[in-house]
Length: 192
Length: 301
Image (cartoon, rainbow over all chains, first blue to last red; front, side, top):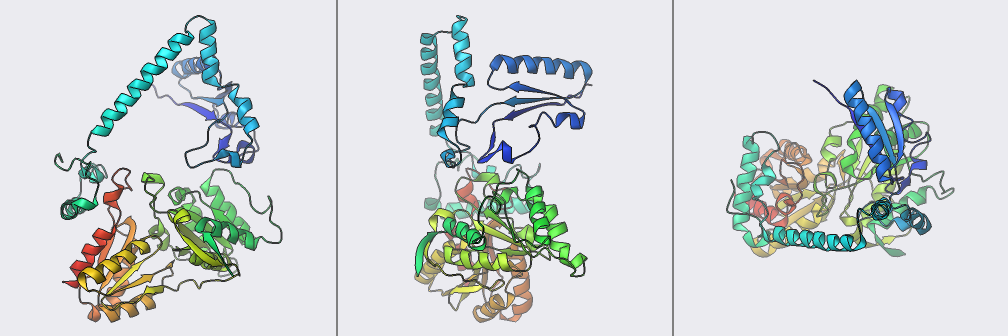
């Protein structure tokens, strides 16, 4: 039996608003690997082919020699951390624009174009198809009822203990008595 | 003179008020992403004599700091026979449901910390309360865990006095007087119970007394027990799960102190004994309908 440990780390320069310079004084993540006896490599995370090469080579080492490998893929977080974040509060749009020019997806696209593997018209058509697929799936999913509220109480443990079963019963009774006050698009009938 | 202030602004102002002589990057700074480190660093600063106000991004992330807070901060004074202490530490964190937070942006972990002698735990309900309680917590000579109901950051707005003022820790506040039922809660849940008080009055003719505990540890047993001895009925409500939630502590103490005054068993209306859910949040939180049902139950016992 082979046990593999294969560690890949994406370093995008931020933890929400904290830049990496305030996160560590050492040389990123790759410098920590040797401290654990793990062979470590840093790669340009914006370069699809480089990441592929490194990953392939590292995997071969893991499988052949049954030892872990650490990959630190360097990139830059162009977007905000989340919908609750406005990153203009802590970094300049100049930085964002600079890194946008090294955009990994754009680079990959341009590469495929230059090799004749892909074309602008194919890309346009593909995007339209995919968008339609996503929107259709979304519409279909929104039509469906959400699962039974019993799901709220499932999987806390492998078996539902009595005290949680009692709470589920309480919810059933309560929601039945106050049906207007709770969202109706849950599968109230089929609690399997 | 007062200013309309959102809760969020209060928190920033409090921190600045204390650092008013030399605010700057040396005094207000980012830390590495390590809660154990944030707490540990805060403890170290505090024990060296500096006022340390540490922030955990969400209360859901505080657990890596738990060992530092329980085994170091809480025991510093006790284990050194009062030779040293960690009193200048305050650790703040947003807590509670926000509508879409799910497992890791909605938790109310006050019960875990309330179980640790040596810590104080404080939860404010509004901007005016937050300023007074936070300043009191920062200046208190014991490590304080200050939990801020995040949903109130943008919802709660009040005319906050600009001057310096403190609200005494370990004092509960009767925010609404009544004669038939004592309701105890903290943070955002008070707003839910406010509505329930009105519903109880209008639909049941029941007069409810509403108490904001404010400090969870050490909690103001006298105010609560005095109220229950008057009303004979107790309802405690919190978002945290029912089993071993802080309501259990309140109810246990009250039944011991007010046994002969009780007209009905105490009611606890809390989150269910599951992780905080995502899409099922409306069914999970102790909303006004569940609280109202509990009032009906204990007034018709």
